[in-house]
Structure formats: C-alpha cells, structure tokens
Amino acid sequence: MSARFLTLHNGSAVPFHEVPRLELTAFLQQMIDAVDRGWRVSSYFGIPTEAGATLCCALSSTSDGSIALATADAAGSFPSIARFCPQVQLFEREIAEQCGLPAEDHPWFKPVRFHRAFVPGRDAWGRAAGEPIPVGVMDYYRVEGDEVHEVAVGPVHAGIIEPGHFRFQCHGEEVFHLEISLGYQYRGIEQGLMGGPDPRTPFRMETIAGDTTIGHMQAYCMALEALAGTRVPARAEALRGIALELERLANHTGDLGAIAGDVGYLPTASFCGRIRGDFLNMSAVLCGSRFGRGLVRPGGVLFDLGPAERDDLLARLDAAQSDLQGAVEILWDAPSVMSRLENTGTVPADTARELGLVGPAARACGLNRDVRRDHPYGIYRMAQIPVVTAHHGDVCARSTVRWLEAGKSLDFIREQLKQLPGGGCRNEAGSLQPDRIAVALTEGWRGEVCHVAITGADGRFLRYKVTDPSFHNWPGLAMALRGEQISDFPLCNKSFNLSYCGFDL
Image (cartoon, rainbow, N blue to C red; front, side, top):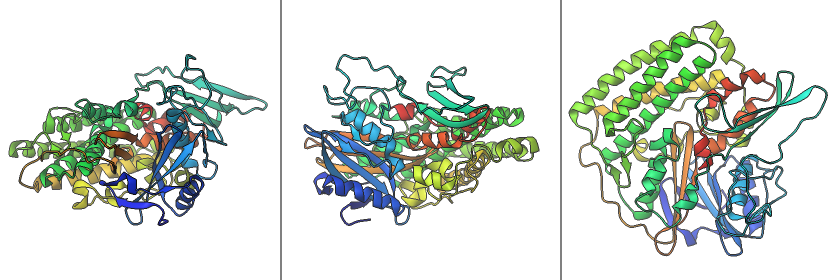
C-alpha cells in the first residue's frame, strides 16, 4: 500500500484528522492501483459537506492484515472509477444517492435504494424536491435480437421472502443477463445513526439483518470499544465467538436444507429445517433469544454462562452434529442431487475477485479470504478456525463450503466451551473520544461485515457506515446466472442466500 494511505489494524481507531486527505485524482488512482495489487474495497462512502462530500475509502489486505484509509474532497460531482475497478460500482451509486453528487462517467448510473439525499435539496439525478421516487422504476439493461425476451420477477414473490426485482434477458431458456433491483425496504438506518449512539442504536444494529444479529453487533461493539478505549474481558470474547459460530451453524444448516429442497431432495430439506432450530435454540441458551438479541453489548456480553448451561450446550452440540452429519451425507451420496448441483451457477475465480465477493460465495470460487484469519479479532486472535475453500465456484462448491465450515464451527464451539476463561463478562464502556475514526471487520456467516464509525468534535457519530456482505455479493448472483437455464435461478439464489434488508439498510 502506498504510504499516502494510513494503515491500521482491525478494531482500532485513529484521530480522523490524521487520515490523509488526498487530491481527488490521486486518491482514485491509488484506489485503482491498490486493487490491482490485491487489496479489496471493504467500504467506500461519502460524508456530506457544504460543497459536496468528503469521500472515504477503507481498503483491506489479506497478506498482512492491514486496513488502509484515505479521504478526498469532491465538489459538485466525483469521477467514477467503476470501469477500472468494478467492485466500487455499487459504492459509487450509493455515494451519489446519499450525498446528492453525480458519479461522472459511471457505466450504469442509477439509484440503489430510491431515497432522497442526506442533504435536503440535492439530487444526483436532478429530480425535483417534491417529485416521487418510485422504487425500481428506471431503465434496465436490454438485449435485443430474434427470439430474445424479457422475464420480470418480483418485487412481490410467491414465497414469504423479502421484496426484490429480478429482470432476466433470455433466449429461450438461456439467461443472457440478469439485473437485480432492490431498495423496497429502505429504512434509513445510516442516516438515523448520525448524532448517535443513543439507547436505540444497539437495537438498530441487531436488526440490520435479523439473521446476522451477532455479526453486526460484534462489529458495532468493536467500533465503539476502539473509540472509547474499552477492554473486553477474555470470557466475553469467548462467548461472543461461540454466539457468532452458532449463528453461522444455524444459517449454514438452513441453507443446506433449502438447497436440498430446491432440487426436490426432501429428506435433507426436512432434517435440516429441524436441526437449524436446534442451533437457534442453543443461542437461546446463551441469552434467551434464538437470534442472539440482547447478548452482545459494548464492553462485553450481558449474559454469562454457568456450568449447567455449558454442559447442556455440549450435549446439544453432540446431538446436533450427529443429526447434521446424517442429514447432509445422504445429500452427497445421491447422484441425482449432485447432477443438479455440479456445474450449475458457476462464478469464475477471476470474476469473483474482480467483483470483490466475500464469505462462502468467494471461498467457493477458490478465493482464500476470511476475516477471522486475515484480520483476527476477539477470540480469533487466540483460537484459529481453518479456512475452507472450494474451486469450482458452482452451487455444489457453495454447498460444500457451508458443510465443511459447519464442521469447523462445531469443533470451535466445543473447544471454547471446555476452556471458558474465568472472570467477568463485561467492562463498563467509556465515552467515545472526539474526532476519531474506527474500522471494524467481522466474518459474519455470509462474509465480511464492515462498520466504520467517525466521531465529531462532540464525540457523537459524525458518520456511521455499514457494509453488509450482501452488498458485495448480489452482483455475484447476477453473474452466476449468465448462460444458465432460467429455471436454475431459484437454486442459484438459494446457494447465495443474500440479504435484502442487509442491502437496503
């Protein structure tokens, strides 16, 4: 990384005025150069100013665990670099929408979540203040030619799922292109966090994506603890790690069952649905909530674990592991299932790298990246979890990674329960220091969760940026459908299982 970017480690904070403020062209060129050298854009956002916005970029490197920060001022508009660095194309559209600044020469410039800019009176698309902004109403990419047709799906779906619009360009059954439009449940979370934290903030964090409660709360707490200089007790770090792996187990198990259901293999689908509930119930043993709500708070955790609960969890883990093994191994032994999973929805490794995919979707393409190892935090600084990868980038690879990761999580939880550190489980969180920036990365079950918190002179949030792993991975689903049969969409979609609300924020 160029010396013109400031480097720091995960879960740390530095004075915001020490973050280099570069000339805009140099700032963008260094982003392009860094990505060419293997860095990845973890977060890229704007802080609205009177003249335009201060752009802030957080790059991450797997080679030495560094995070690099720099800023640049943009007035009136800012140049797009998406043609050279595709992984920023959504970030640039988001900056334009939030700060009201057009991204010049963006290859496909349109809204992300269809809301007004954070600054009243500004609009990157020149829409009048009173003009309605209907969600999803915009130009879509079109393929023209003999027998080429368009298929529109959603935003209302047949099942009980969140709203999203999928538009396919097809020739017969073959998909030439898929465009995904979200934003139907925009909640204004980032805008609502400005001026915080306040008593509502933890609850907002827990519901950014309901199935990633622990992942987002861990990142939020790391950011606040860095800003306040709060030390977390070892016992709390272990309990947070156990909760995070239980969250991963519940969702990976549910996904394996859903994938089996989509290919009509009901034994695994049925068993995994029940076993997912077992893992959720283990989270309830920790804190009384199946989704881990109310457990993780700045300074530690709100609930300790007694010997009886620990022994109960160990017994439940043994039973669930045995059941999960039986449910999933029959999946791999069914030739009809494997013929549907293999070579379906393939994302090449180069494409995954170019888009900046994260989590199981990236590891299934052979990208060896995992925040728990690359940017260790909390208990993962002391206890490593081996990173699992596959190499075909298809539905089978994404399923295999989930299955193998479930085994690693079970071993990790069992080990932590047997050697829980003594002592307390929470320290008092202090006041946030003014004029500082903190970056926190965690490995949620979908992949990298990134929170960036910046405090102003009053020690309150000047800006709080959240990047859910789904923000990185939705373009990967679109690429997985190219050249596939349109009937494979549900299966490909399940194999990614991305969050709509985590994207819409």
